[in-house]
Length: 118
Length: 114
Image (cartoon, rainbow over all chains, first blue to last red; front, side, top):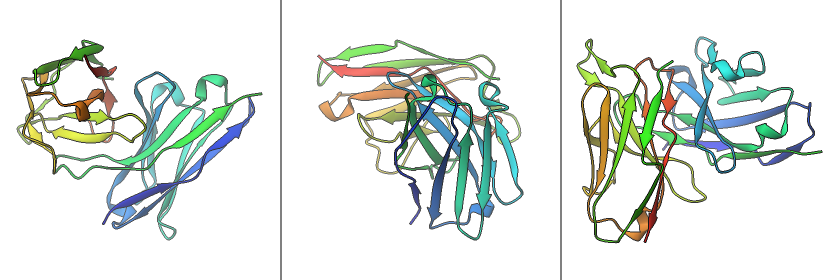
């Protein structure tokens, strides 16, 4: 059974960085793209980008380019997202997800709340 | 990037009535290689992660009641909910994945019970 378990809530100061983990079980990270999506308070879902850990390919949405890094550790079955130069506007729930590709097999982590506050 | 636009943004519904949500993409989501339209619908219930309702335009995800249906063409799509129930409350999103892994979401439609 597929499970995605994310690291816990964190509070960061403006200008700091945050690194969130997403541990996968029930499938091989080598075979799937893993997405990162965020939801700020009162806002909609926003794609941050994705990583295919098998070949190391990554892409960040234009809004986050230069500020986000995606990494993966196949042996640890974990993917990571690091976001730098945090501002209050980065306060949000961050989700990792294995998005369905047409077979309806769609899986999301439980979300990680990142609060940016001085 | 493909832009997804949903209307309405807020949708009050009386239990038992039907509801429809529209979504439009800035370009066609039809893929001539596989013949599919790469448009999905998600529901995010309060305090939960998003859950897939409909994939590839009109296919219900596992466990989704047949009260939910998806339809549309290359750029215009509709999610219909028949006989709305209290458990249907939440925010509905359309999402395109034509150029997967790149994806984009609509702004979301908040369904509330009158």
